[in-house]
Image: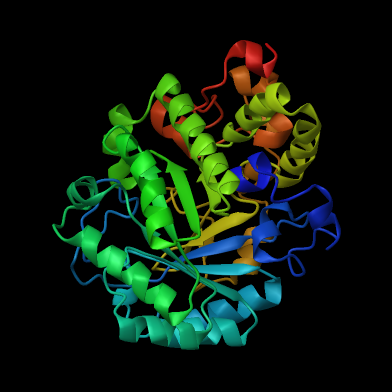
Length: 393
C-alpha cells in the first residue's frame, strides 16, 4: 500500500510515525503502514455469498448459499485471539459481508475487544438504516468497491444498477457520519475512467480512494491478458499522482493510495528526485519504514471456513485453520516452509528482484502474482514496470 497523498503531497513526514514509536497499537490508522512490529491487519472473509458477479472476484463468489462458514461462536473465539495478539485492524470482507445475518453483532463485538473494524463492501446493500446501524457498531471505515463509472462498473460487476446502488450506499455512509472511501481495481477495461473517478470523488465529497493493481487470483486469473502493460501502468500511476496533486493544490485533501504493486513506491521516489530532492529523501525514509509487500507478515487472511492464508489472494495455500489452532499460533509458526520464507524472503528471490537496489522498500512485490504468471514463486513479479536502469542493474 503506497500512500500517494502521504508521500507525493507531503501529508505525512518521516517524523510522524516515529513520535508513536512505530508501534501498531499506538499509531493512528493513517500511519499503520509505517509500523515497526508489523502485527498483521487481518482480512476476514465472513462469508462467500455475494449479490454481484464481478469479473475479477478472487473468491469466485456467487449469489448462492455456501456451507462450512465459521459460526458465531467460532468467530467470537477468533476475534478474542486477534485482540489478544495485537492485530490492529480486522477488515470484514466477503463475498459481500453484509449478506451475513450476524455481521452487525460481530462488528460490534470486535469493537468491544478494542479492534479497529473496517468493512470492505460493494455498497449496494447500505440503505440509510444499515448505515445508521453500522455507525452505531463503531465501524471505523467503509471501503466501497467501484470499478469505473456507471457503464464500466456495471459491466465489470455483472449487475445493471450496481453503480447507482453503490453510490447511494456511499452517500448513506456519509450521512450517517461514517468515513467512506472508494476501491478501484485497474485494468484495460476501466483505466480510461481513472480521471472520471477523481471527478466523482470531488463531486461526492468522498475523502479516500485506493487504486488496486490487478492480482491474478480467482476470477481475476482470467483477466491476466487484460492487465495494464508496463507503459500503461506508468501512465496510470502518473495520472493518479497528477490528479492527487491537483486536488491538494486546490485545497481538496484527498487521501489517495495505490495497492498491490510496491514498485509504485520507488517510481514515486524517482519522480520526486527530479521535482523535489529534499522531499524525496524524506519519502525514501518513509518507504523504508513501510517495508514493501507484507503478505505473511503485516497482512493476513482468514477465509470463511477458518483457513489462514498469507493474504486474501493466496487461497491455494493455507497455514492452518482457526477452528484447530488460534490465528496467533499459526501466524508465528515458521515450521511451514512458505511462511518461513515469506517472513524472510530476500535470500530466496531471483532475477531482477535479487539485484534490485529498491529491494528493501519493495520486498519482492507480489509473490502470488509471480507464481500465477510464471509458475515460479520466487521469480520477479511480472507487474514490476521499473526499468533495469531505474533499479540499478
